[in-house]
Image (cartoon, rainbow, N blue to C red; front, side, top):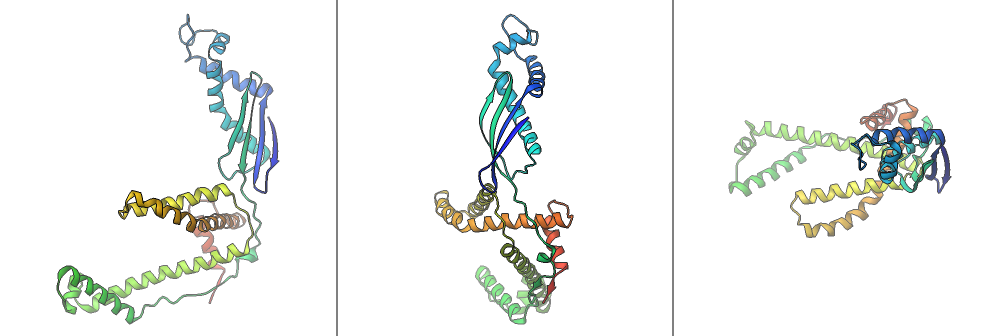
Length: 295
């Protein structure tokens, strides 16, 4: 196989791929032989016509099917031969097939190579966040709940009945439950704040160019999620496009940061021999926090 690689920019590469000679002939002949068993030629039963006659009558069909089945495999082989790791699907063009060869062009963005030193992500200083909810917050939640009950029931309940309305035997139990929920919410916000500190630091510290195609795909996903949420909330179809334009502008920087952050976390995972799976990001963040100084 002949593979010529041309760099268009830092990440985008164009591959000129050609499969010819014995390797091509063997693949083609084997495929044509299998395919010929299902093709008909006038005067012959299906699969009984001579292969040369089948090639003559069904030349384009055979070529099209061969391309459809083998081009992805040949492209993958070309990537491995060139030691290229793609960041997405290629743009394929100039497909040509003859009796002697198959050739095509494939333009693709590659995954960025990131070298990260341990000192960059170890011993980070992380600002802690208080998580204990105060009495004022509890009282505010009770007041809000009381107003909601009054609105739907048209009754101004006393503390005992209000607690029972919420399924608790007394007001002290109700307050404890609210305090617990506020504490859980606070813990969740605390972790999110800490993760954001790490994310902001790494995005600022690591300079890397990320594939535009991946940013575009993730951007579309983010916009689509927002539109779906609006649909679930009952927003009319004709009004969705107004929101779409705003989402597209608002979410574009977020998409770029998220893709970049993923590549940074993956580079750390590779350096630390962490398995790349669905838990990778959480594992890497856990590792960073285990080495951090929380102040």
